[in-house]
Image 1 (cartoon, rainbow, N blue to C red):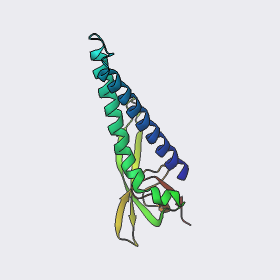
Image 2 (cartoon, helix red, strand yellow):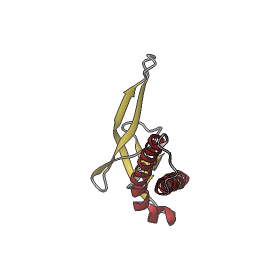
Image 3 (cartoon, helix red, strand yellow):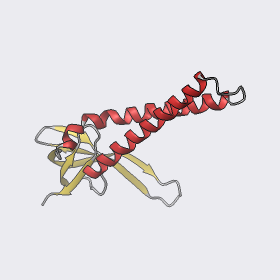
Image 4 (cartoon, helix red, strand yellow):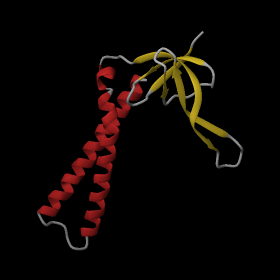
Length: 145
């Protein structure tokens, strides 16, 4: 769980630096008038793509920063919860009739609240010890005995 957090954090920071670096490079070329008339369309197109990538990285970074204090101190929220339902159900487009369930909704009786987390291999009605980061929803579920 912690490795997933740090990998996602590193990818997001690298993507943001990459996008901002190329965006500043494109702006520098444009200001110095080293962009020809033919390549203005290419310049504008690449600038829009890099700006879009930067915005996506910033939106991904916000919940990561909110959970940073937990991940930095190797802490997490831990509760005993029961899977109530799956919030994302889709049917396989291959026509083989398989159904895929994801994003389980857990009920935490101690807090009397529901939380939707990103975790696999859980079953409805089963009780699990869940460890998760509250903002990124990165989770690990262990069956209780």
